[in-house]
Image (cartoon, rainbow, N blue to C red; front, top):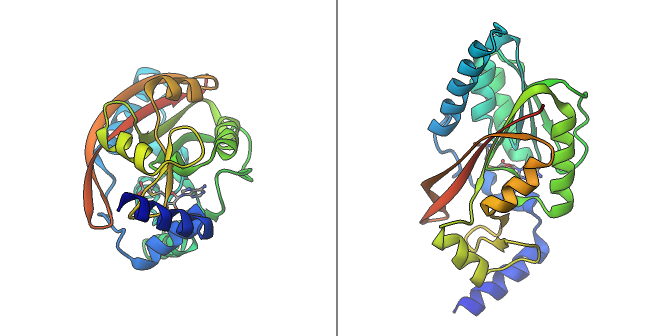
Length: 247
Ligand SMILES: C[S@@+](CC[C@H](N)C(=O)[O-])C[C@H]1O[C@@H](n2cnc3c(N)ncnc32)[C@H](O)[C@@H]1O
């Protein structure tokens, strides 16, 4: 049974890249999971406010520039823009970008949603952003794209700027271990989610530190457990919450 499922996923994945998988998901219109940012992101914003207060830089949120990687239908970008930040989003699914632009237009906001992969050159200025967010987005990059994403994020972030990442964890997650065993993809710690067709990487704590710690200072690294829905099924999964700073 598993072998049959695996074969059909392999076939589907030969035909569909991750961009097409996401386009299809957004086309089905079953991705709208609330239009408010999730708790972990609101906590990060609270943390930022405290940090800016401590540093006595007297920074107002409306002086800040934010980049949302994998901005999807724009939930987090809109939230930041409504609070006065200058927001840019990079997203490769045109179905998602259309929805995000429409929401932004209706709210009278001016968000620069760029339709492209953030696994390639960002086409944005050096040292421009105070904040970069990557919420459940970079997990489907391949190794080559991940190196570009890391270098580009470092390049466009100002010195002292913050990078917030939420990414699936391997440690202590029986579902991740099952997926790695039953539906492995080619690169390290990657599998193909059967209900979805998406290739995804999970990270051990050690690999995560190795990946981000070369360029950024690690300010916070926490693990949280949440239920995630793929198709009609709910899975208990672990995620890393990572706050980084460019020195
Ligand atoms: C799980 S969704 C998260 C969306 C949004 N960050 C949020 O928290 O609601 C992942 C998003 O990343 C986008 N994405 C994944 N890989 C990407 C890439 N290489 N370039 C641009 N967008 C990408 C997907 O199309 C999707 O919209």
